[in-house]
Length: 342
Image (tube, rainbow, N blue to C red):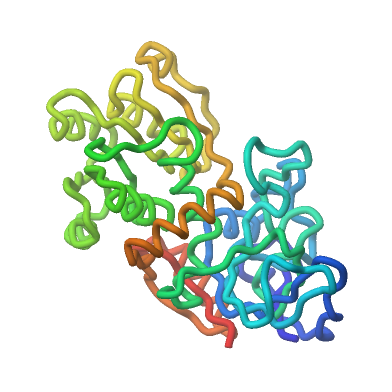
C-alpha cells in the first residue's frame, strides 16, 4: 500500500512517500478503513517541522502523519458490530475519548501521535470505537475536514463550556479551517458572526460564507474597537481564539463581561502569560482539546439536518502531498486543504 512517513522533522523535505505491505485482516473489534481523503491542520504542519516534540506524547520519527481521515470500511473483525463493510466513515481525532470527561490515558496531540498511525495512507486499521458514519450528502473530501477542525469548532461553540444560543454573537478569526467551520456551525445554530481577517482581499469571501460583520485587522492591535462598535459596546458572547498570546488583549476586549473564550490554537507560536485583564472582565475560559466521539456524532447530525458543506480551498492528489503542505503554509487559503487518496 502507498503511504507517507515523516522521516525527519525538517519540514516538507522530511515527508517521504513509501510502499509497504498491505495490512493484515482486522481482528476482534477492529475495522480496516480504505482512506479516501485527509485534510491538513496546523498541528500537522507543526508536527512536520518538529514543533511538537517537546509535548508529552509527541510525534515519533517515522510516523504516518495527518489526524484527519475519511473513507469506507473494507473489512471488519469478528466482534465488530458498530459498522459494516461498505459504510462511509471518518476516524476520530482522539482514539480513546468516546464521551464525557477527558479520559486518563488522553493524548492531547491525538491521532498520528504516540502509538497510533495517521491518515496519509491508503489503509488504516482502527478499533470500531474510533469511527463515525458520515452524513450522506458529504463527499469523502468534505468529510475529511471534520475530525479535527470541525469537532474543535463544534466543541468550542456547543460541546464543552456553555452552549451557543440562537441570536448570540460569535467572533471567529481569520480564514483557516477551524475559523471557517466555526463560522458555518455558528450560523446553522442561529448565531450572528463577526469575522476578522488581516487580508482585505478575503473580506468579501467571508461575507459570502455568512459572516454578518467582517473586520479588517491588517493595521495590527486595536481591532477590538471595531468589534465593540459592531456589538454596541457589549462585546461578543463567544470568541474562538486561534491567534495566540500576541492577540489576547484584543480577544479579551472583544468579548463581553462574563462571556467565554475558547482557546483553540496559537498560530503566532509565541509563549505568553494570560493577562490580568482576562480575570478583571470575568471571562470564562474554554481551552479546547478538539472533542470526543460524541461531539463528532452530534455535529454530524446537525450537518446532516441542515445540509451544511465544509469549505474546501483546494484538493491535491496523493502524489502531491508536498505541494499541499506548501499551499497550506502559504497562508492564502480560505477553508481546508485536502489530499485525495485515489
